[in-house]
Length: 474
Ligand code: FRU
Image 1: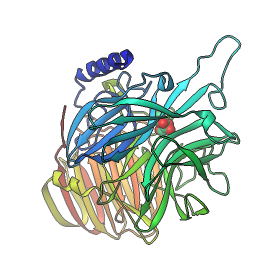
Image 2: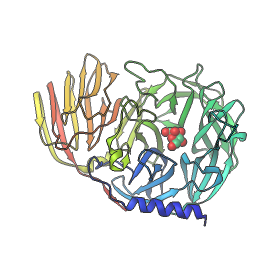
Image 3: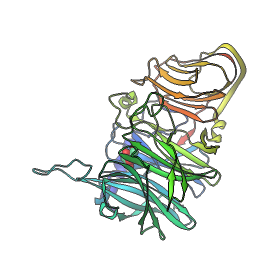
Image 4: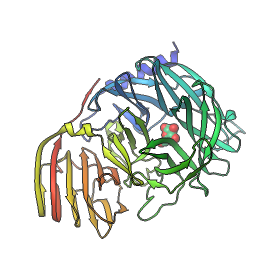
C-alpha cells in the first residue's frame, strides 16, 4: 500500500471526527464533513447506489490540495458519508486529484480525473503556471465495488494532448456511445481560447484525440468541466467558461456555467448554437450530469472560484465552506432546458400549507422550507428578513439586505411569470422560475433568530412545506 495514501487517509478521517457546529449546516444539501468542497465529480449510479464524489480539501476550509470526497445513497434522501476515495499520493497527481467523472461498468467503476502537478520554482526558474510549470495528467482509477479505490494508471500527459495548448487541459468527462468510449476535456489554447477536446477509446485505456469543440468566435480563455449529453433529442455541450465579459442581466458572475445546443456529429462536423447560462445566482459553477437510467440529473457546485474580494462565506470560521446543489432533473422542451429539483425531495416535505394569497402572506416561523407559488402578477418574496426575490416588468431579481456577505443583486430577464419554486435551506436558496426555465442559486447567511417568509402579490396560489433534513450517516 502506498504509504502517503495511508497517512492522508488517516489524517482525513481524523479531521472528519472533529465536530462541526450546527449553525448554517444544510439539512437537505451535501456539504463537506469538514473543510472545503468544490466541484461534484464522478456522479453515477452503480451497484444500486448513487455515488457523489466531490473536490474536497478536509484540512482547510479555504481550500488546498484536493482529494475526492465521497457520499453514496440508494434514493437521494438517505446518504452515507464514505471515506475520501482518491488522494494525491502519486507523482502524477501530487498537487491535487482534480475534477473528473465515472464510467459505471458491469465489472466496476472507472474513475477518470486530472492529476494536478505544480513544478516548484527555483533560483533562475520561474513559471506563469499557464504555459509552463504545470502538468495536467489524465489518470484512471478503478474500483471493483465502489468501496475501495486502487490501481491508478497514468493515461495521458500534456505532451499527449493536441498541439497549440497551454498546460491547462483538465476535467475528463467520459461516456459510452454505441460501444465506443468518449472523453471530453476542458482546455485553454496558447491564444487563450476556451475549447473542449474530444478523445475516443475502444478499451477505456488508450485514447486518441478525434475532435475539438469550440465556438466560431472565442468565448472566454478557458473552458472548465465540459460535459456532453443527449436530452430529449438535443445534443447538449455543457461548459464552465472563464473570461467571458459580464453583462447587466446575464453572465453577471466572474465565471459562468451553461450550455450550447450542438447540431451535427460531435465526433465530426458540428455547429454550436447560442450559449445559455444554467443559473443566474451568485453561487453556481462546474455542474456535472449523469443518467440514472430514468432521467438526466445535474448537480452543481454551490460556489464560485476566485470571488473572495466580492463575497465571502462566514462558515469558514466554523471549519467548512460550500455545498452541492440538490440533484436537478433536466428536460429539454422546445429548445428550453428546464431544471427541476429531483422528485425524491418531495418526501422531505411536511406540514403543507395551501392557500390563495391576495395582498400579503406571512409565515413568521419558516426558515428551511419548500415554497411553490403560481401567479402571473408582480411579486415580492422576503426570506428571513435578509433575502428578497422580486418579479416585475419582465425582470426577476434576487438581492440581499444583509446576510449576503457581499452578495448584492442578480437579475434575469423573465418576460412572463407563471410560477416559482424556492428551496430554502439553512444557508442557501435555490429558485426555480417557470418550471425550471430560469434558475438562481445562492448561499446566504441569516443571523441567529432571523426567520420568516413574506409573500406580497396581487393574486396567487401558494403551497408551503417545512423541509425535514435528509439522513446522513457516517
Ligand atoms: C473547477 C476547477 C476544475 C478543477 C478543479 C480543481 O472549479 O477549477 O477545473 O479540476 O476545480 O479543484
